[in-house]
Structure formats: C-alpha cells, structure tokens
Image 1 (cartoon, rainbow, N blue to C red):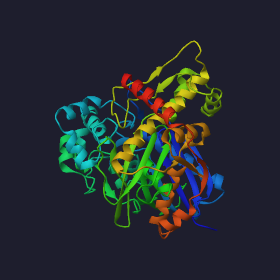
Image 2: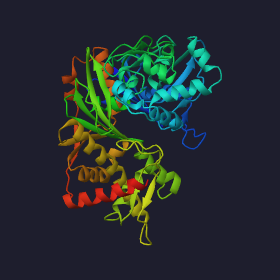
Image 3: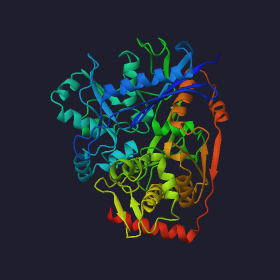
Image 4: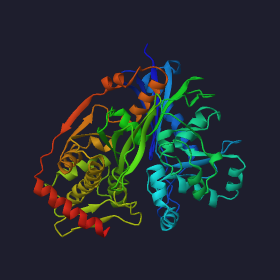
Length: 492
C-alpha cells in the first residue's frame, strides 16, 4: 500500500481536500462550501470556525471516498486563500472577529491616506506590493482599531493573528504551532521581500504589534503535527504550505524562470517565475515570493484580476441569465461574437495594472438586438481581456515574451473561455490533466517536506498535459478589441 498525502485547499467559497498518492493520482476528494458574509457594501467576511469545520468535514469525506484509513496518511499540505486574516485568543483559541476576506474593500480610506502621506514607494520597495485594501496589513490594523480591547490584548501577547494557513495549522496542531509560510507572509505588507522577516518599520506604520504575528517558515518545513483529531493520524506532519497562487505555480511544475500559469477561480491570477532574484515591476504588478525550500528562494511577478469566476456567479445569482455556472459556455457559444457588448468585470474594483478600488463593473454597447448569449460571451471576453492586459505588463517587466501559458482552476474547464484567452494573449495555452493544481502544489510541497519526493525532478515527471489551445485571431482584430476594452475600462 502506497503512502498518501492529504492536501487541504481552503478557498474563498469553500474547502476542498484531496487524498493523493505520490504519483499525483487523486484517490479521494471532499468539498464543503462556506458562507459569504457581506455586512456592508464592499465588505466581505468569513466565519473562522466554519472554515475549520469545513476542513474536518471535507477531510473525512476525502478519506472515505478514497477508501483508506488515516494510517496511510504520511503528510498534510495546506494551501489557502491569501490575504484573508483572522485574529484569535491564544488561551481559548476563539476568534476575536470574523475573518476579513481578501476581497474586502473596507480599508480603502486607510490605504488612500498612506498613499497621500507618500508611503507607497517604501512599501513597494520593502514588500514588492502596492498599497491596496487587497493585502492583509491594513485588515489587521482595522481589527485592532475596531474590535474593543483587541489592541490592548495584542500588545500584551494574548492574541495570535495570521492568514488562513496560520489559523488551520493552529487548529491542526492543537494550538501548539503559530506559524506561517513565506508566501503567505509576503502578501501582508509587513514582511521584507528579501529579508523574509517581519519588518519593524512597516509594522509600526500600520500599528500592528509584531508579537501577534506568526513565525515565518520555508514552504517545505514541518509547520506542526496533527494533535487530537480523529480524522487524521496523531503526529502526522503538516510539511508543506503555500498561498493558493504560489501553490498553483508549483503544482504546474513552473520551476524555471520565464514559466507562467494563470489560475481561473473566483478571480484570475497570473504568476511568472522570475528565478532567484526579485524583479521589481515598473508596470504596477506585484513582486512576490514564489516559494522557499531547501534554503533557496524563487520569486515571481504576479498580476491578479479580482473577478473571474465570480462574474459568472453574478450572472447566475444576480441576473439569473443562467441557472448553473456550467451553462455559461453553451450560452456564450450560441452567438458568433459579443454583438458589440463590452463587460468590464470590476465588481470589486480594478486590480493590476490599474489598482483602482473605486472602479465598478460596466456593461456597454447594449441594443435591442442584445441577447443573453451576447452578454454571456462578453463576460467571458471581459475575463480574458483583464488577463491580456496583465500579461502585456508582465512581459514588459520580465523583458521577454511569453510563448505559452499553463492554466488551471475551475473555469479552465471552459473550452470557449480558454480559446478566447489564447486568441487575446496570442500564445499557446496548455491545460493540465489535473486542473486542481492549487491542491496539487500543496501536496507536492508536503511530499518534499516529508521526504516522499527527492526533488522537483520527480514532481515534474508526474505533471501531465490535457489539451493545448492555439491562437487564431487576426492581429488587427485583436488590436481593435483591446482598443475598445481600454476605452471601456477608462469609464469603469
């Protein structure tokens, strides 16, 4: 009987747990949706206890569907929605407030004030990030300023805080480990990109006490050991952790500089491996840690679109033009083009390369001839156009043209969207046999940390392609579409 890895993928809308063998074969799968809370317009929250419960339920379902006992599990990996933060009481383990989700825009006034004070260049130089409500630091500051008594407790050392990986490791280890990995830490506005330590000056500016923050570890460290849970074996190591997008880059076996991937989930996230030296963007992209393992750090350029699959969910839940998300492809394919309709998916502001939190979604070009099909197709084109803008900026920063792009995530199963994306990027797109590469990357890292893999060469051998999409759009048509897009974005 082969050794198995449990990979926990805690995402924005739910938790997926996979059981895999070392050949990257999925033996079992479990999923549990989590509730989205919207206490005010632009605010998004999750219940940390519900997140933890979703992990336990999904893990039990995954092991049951695999038909194996916990004794075969030799390692646990975690990947998670990044930038989402939670604070909890060290003594009781109880959350002090709902988790503030990465999509939440409540700290926009604070980030604008910091920009007005001329502090964005300092944050960018130290962290590779921009001042935007997206990142964790201002969310922690908001909790400290708005939850009664929290700041006093944090300064006294009674409060632990971190991103979702830290919360899950704490729970898995029975409260023994308050740690994070370097990729999640690199998304907080509080970690030095090159020092990979919490930056005292940045913590002071954001008024976040460093003692409430977790210890930063490499991605293949032993973060803790499972303690007191019936669903997983006692003492099994949590030996691989990475934020979801870095985990997907790793799961796509993008181990060489210049290799890139795009994950189509709630948002769309494009990362390019830039090697052992951080490449600082001049086009308002992000410079981030791709992973650290074996004493070596790899860096990445990143461009994120806040809304991708969430736009399809809005068409389903908000407008009701489809009853299931999977219906979008057939509906969009029912028309040959968008009929002049343009959709800018700025439902949560515009991210890279614009970084306009005040922007809002836009639909232009509607006429009496517009149908549900035109709107559906324009939505897919809008998702793809966001990524085309990001890639153009990424190529300029990296100083090289991308010849191919690996894709993953739920929406990458949409063949029409992938073909539109290939046309607009003017590059080959490769979809892997397993599109859940976020969970796969966490499993690979956990396997490395537990000694189940010798090196990344063994991991690369396990990666398999499913299908290629080749561009077929005329250059003049691509230029026309991009011009129309830029005009629409200027009005969003």
